[in-house]
Length: 330
Ligand code: PMP
Image (cartoon, rainbow, N blue to C red; front, side, top):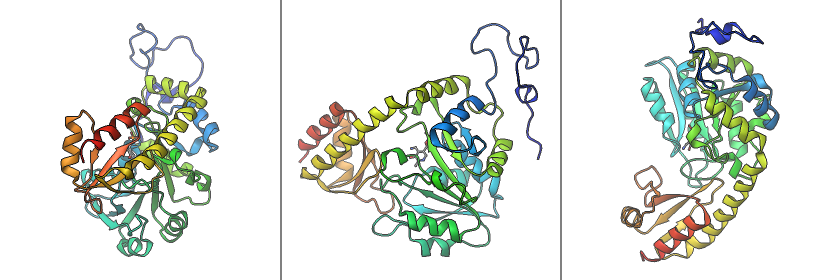
């Protein structure tokens, strides 16, 4: 397949007069199309993450590579995808939008992946397995050894979505990119980097996989404002690290306080920036919190999450407002 060749693809380098892309010559600095392959930004990310620049794909959030992986590797109505349940809802939505069958395998009682059941759900038409670690909405890491078993036993693509990896104290699967050429690791600027609004997601994979994703993406899928903003963030990683430490210490505070509340039955262990809490009456408490101006995510209708609310760790003030409100709902 021939990808669209944009003006900025055909000429790269130094010049003073650009009359090749039908742009408006005025209105600097945003009158020009951005670099379609975001090389400057990718070089910074490569250095920061310790990966080869050719192994990076950047998208409009990590939702873009989720969709692209399905479009690239799956034949609609013929192939299928296997994933865990409960997990991030976009894998299933993107599969259905692309008319690809989506097979869900329930997690075990520790919210870990049941490898035997997962591999049993795989057949000759399974092209992609989606895993999420730390998982959303459960919050926990899947066991590393189990993910290894899947990477070793399945010959198709294994996506490990690490949107929340910065909040975990375990290493990223990026360290094993070279070992598993069928692996795609997803990360994002939406969580620890505090930039959900700018929409920047990262997929890390073998250069062969990245080349295929690049063929299918929109030519200018990551806009210039986003590229500039991400470069600014990467120039000061210590700011992100400081925020991360604050979020982790607030998470610990919530983990201590939430279980003391009468309306909280239990909280689940978390490696992410949110806590899944089983409460006495999820719908009533959700509505009560809405009345108090506090919005959490009601997950009571999600597989294995009956009675559960998913609570994002906020600022100290927000977390204290939440606990005070929940004290009043007993
Ligand atoms: N993966 C997981 C597990 C998520 O929870 C989310 C966002 N909620 C995403 C991916 C999407 O992130 P992005 O903002 O990068 O599209």
